[in-house]
Image (cartoon, rainbow, N blue to C red):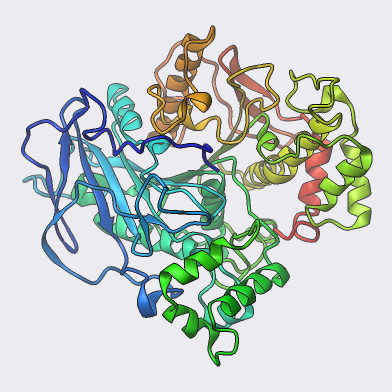
Length: 565
């Protein structure tokens, strides 16, 4: 997900804020497979930026709703100083703060200016000391919206902090197809082998990065992929892709608030959406609906897609990239055996719960809305009783004036666990069972400790990206202000950014070089549960990962049969 109001998009600090403009400096140049890229230099941060780099052929015309194809043009010199268009998402309009189009499959690279690249006289090669580790950011947005140029994902601050701590890295972000354009599902789609196009876009981008990152000074053997929400879910899907292949594209994983999305095998709703869109586009009677949709005018097709009420787009089981439910693949051991860092915010569900849930019947409706049968619903209802001390946010007290439902906290606790915490625990348990390095965290830093939103979904993003300037945030939802905890929050942000950098660099979050911080232990569930790392302005350190354990354990056990994931 993303903030409801993004404010002005800040293009990697270029020309948008006084004092951050690109300085008069020789433009950085790199030679990649397809030609020469001419980027920008940000003198105030000592960084080079290469933006809007195409990694695939534009998915337009006959390539619409097709598997991505590698970029097939060469260029003598390409301007890489501006972001490419964002991919079309659900609800996008001309008022969207960044230009959108179908031609959107680009990526961006931010590096320290001192980075050696293949224009040096030094011999290049994997593992060369001056080649830097690489973090590849995959944005979220429910597989339906958002874009890599979003100011909240600005890579500059993380790269700057990596240099300050003596562990410089290169950061990359990418676009991928969204909504119906990237995640439509139907029998037509499955038979044509073109499901999960957004995931395949990401995979092709990772191939491009693997093949070209040395030109920027990056080490192709030290790539970590990281993402949040659907982006974290994408990281999880890459971990189980094709039954557990990494293809040497990455060596580690970070998933923030990861999720699998909706029922991956139930095509009733996606099929209805597909048929409805085909009919509205004049393709219902066509012998080949998919071919007809490829020829449909963009404006008409986009308007049709956006006319659907509350669509759900997410990856599905296709027998290829997603060969089975992720939980089944994990149980079978069909996943990449690589280091993993993952976690959640304390109150994920506040962004998704109806604040007016007031009765047992309404709570049961929330439970059944996740797709479970009556038996499972009854068990879950018992595992999540209407006890204020067990609800979320923990510090929030429901007012007695009826403005918030009496069972709101109960619904939040259930949805937090059903959507995110059980996803995290299943992977942490699986990695631990296989003896793999895995670290988990719980983030809690609400804007207002008395607010019903608590530490909601997406609230850790500003901390991970060390975005103390609140770039991309509207004032009402900015993570850093002048409140009583401002100093502590900024210290926490620095710690978290450095922990992420440390993991990308050394596969261990503990090499952050800040004093007075407890060791973040690996997650070891041998005794029935592991230890998670608590991240809050007032306290940091390991804690038993036992909160609401019975509920999430049951959810893990029914992940495939009931939740379809």
